[in-house]
Image 1 (cartoon, rainbow, N blue to C red):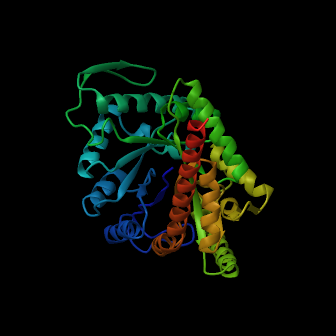
Image 2: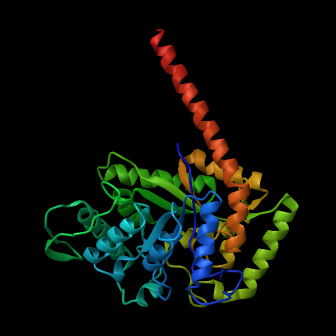
Image 3: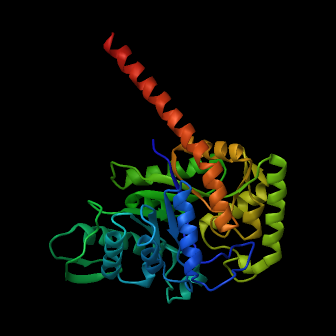
Length: 375
């Protein structure tokens, strides 16, 4: 099966280890970072959403018009616009990018962050709203006749868009979450289900839960899976772990500025709670998973690391691929340099090994067919 690599389409050079050196939207850095991903083997980049951050849709359009061929993953929160408006924004961006758009819908697991933009629904209410929102967006992308809608969260009459995506029948929908409500909503609606980097056993459990929810919703197809990590690589294992120690020290030195929540507040979302619990259970798991970076940030999003040489990190990623993960998301702490290093030294190894696995599987399947014919 194919493997894809997702990087970050950041708008400035700040990270958990370093304060940004320029404005929130540094156009030159944004383009340099996007081009570095495109030139070093990445498939797409994520334009993330934050309540006070630059508008990711406009940043994505800016990059799409200047970096041909790079795929785009646009993050969007349903609380910030009406679905009929949003689906036109997405369709327009798919036109600008010549069909390179995937949309990642963020339900919002942090009440404090949601309240910053006037969203005071409970978590389960937010998941129900996201599911309804995605359904409307999908229909608006594909309907060539006016339609009306009356649901729990949205009501409108006789809507018809005059702009449609390049991709047919529509762009892909991406979704994430680690609670039963998330599994139900994403299992029913997502083309891609996104998870944070947990140990292999827990990742396998989550994949099974999402697949079960997808089947329970009546789907015949199943979502593809994406898992996200923070790679820390170096030419030798010793140097990689020294780099990891320096990275952790820098995160701790920045303190609360590297956290998404106010001081003293525990994470509300299941995904972050799981990461904090995993970190409390041990620093190292499996081949290369390292959790102190997650503990230091309170489980803030994509925060568990893979530490080692490029070969070690590549093999660790392949372990997840063997579980059924087809999209590997990675973001270093030095956004530009780490994107280049990962693209040069890790991506080629993973792609070569995946191609080898595919050849071996095809040969085995051909052998089985020959055996059946000969009976």
